Image (cartoon, rainbow, N blue to C red; front, side, top):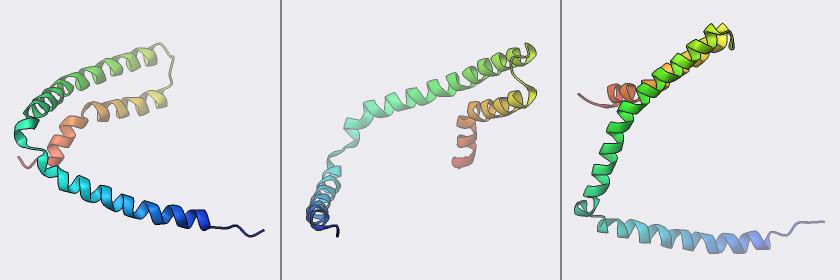
Amino acid sequence: MKQLNVFQTIVRDKITPISAALTVFFVNSSAYAQVENLRNAERALNGLKGDLGKIIPIAAGVILLCLAIAYAGRYIEKGTFIRWAIGVVIAGSASQLSTLLFTGN
């Protein structure tokens, strides 16, 4: 039996103009996002960035300590410990690495 694609054509014909209209609407409305209205958001995001810059390395240190205790107690093997430790060190220093790589200073 041959499959009819009439429904696909109807849906495709309706989606294209709707997508174009939404794109034009949102591109045109972006001029209303003024800097004065975004001061609180900027302050909150900068505070979050500072807090994460302090919390993430401490959490990585605690996780490394737990991994060392698990390795010393022979709950995990050496290969597993090394893999997890390298991953935790990289994740713990991710903010410093991204600052180093993507900042011009």
